[in-house]
Image (tube, rainbow, N blue to C red; front, side, top):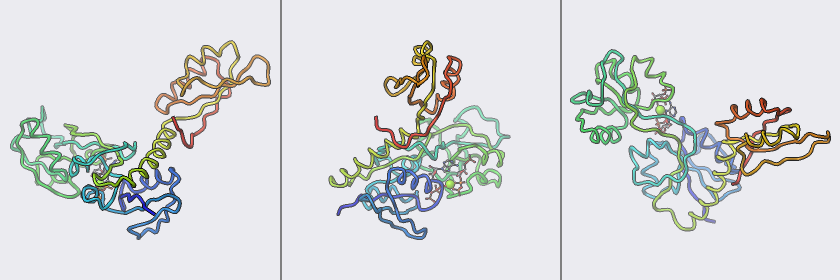
Length: 285
Ligand SMILES: Nc1ncnc2c1ncn2[C@@H]1O[C@H](COP(=O)(O)OP(=O)(O)OP(=O)(O)O)[C@@H](O)[C@H]1O
Ligand SMILES: O=P(O)(O)OC[C@H]1O[C@H](OP(=O)(O)OP(=O)(O)O)[C@H](O)[C@@H]1O
Ligand SMILES: [Mg+2]
């Protein structure tokens, strides 16, 4: 039977959440820690555990059909590769930073300077677009230490909380790109495997939608129903059911995680009581 081959980071920041999303899609993988390849038990899929940085080439060569990878790596090494879904985890940015002590006005301040980075193509393209010429010093890790040991005037690296920059007396001065984990597809994927991909994408979308929303149940006096319903965003219109107690109703709806607490405040103020909030397992629009 044909299987779709997916690349997942072997170890590192993407590994756990990548396997979690597959699990939430109902795909069971026997996961021996040292295995480099595993087969799903209940879906036509094989997992290859690879280095994030090697994945663009594997996709290009068609050795794997799809991959969960940091978008920043595709920008650096795989601009030809198609992104199918943004997966809403491993969010970070790729930024330029300089020592706190350096007076910084604009990207022109990098002219003739030395920048340490693991993302040379990304920096080069960005600086070219700004008409700035700088010297790049390519290193694979611990980039933030470079200015402190006199290796470079500035750096370009991943920033998330900013604590690594802070600890190294650096300040973020330009955000080159924003990144998150994405589902990328090989240009060489076969038609048969594309059909499997369509099924997997349907599941991924249901999982992502569910993660983004909460199911909310509340009680309200009937005379407040119009006001409460007007507050609710919901998928369509909310479900309203009569309670056993005369003059009261139960309202059921779905609320987006981002606006959730604000909506809850408004609902309480409008007279909603006994509000229950439940996670959603899967959601198909
Ligand atoms: N501090 C961070 N916060 C959020 N996401 C991050 C952070 N650092 C890295 N990432 C994202 O996770 C991806 C993997 O990072 P990680 O450090 O685990 O591996 P790597 O060294 O880039 O890759 P490899 O698997 O080739 O060793 C990065 O490409 C980026 O998209
Ligand atoms: O803004 P922060 O939240 O501090 O995150 C940024 C840091 O995280 C990443 O390093 P990581 O911990 O993955 O180590 P690595 O360099 O070994 O990959 C990245 O290379 C930065 O150094
Ligand atoms: Mg890292």
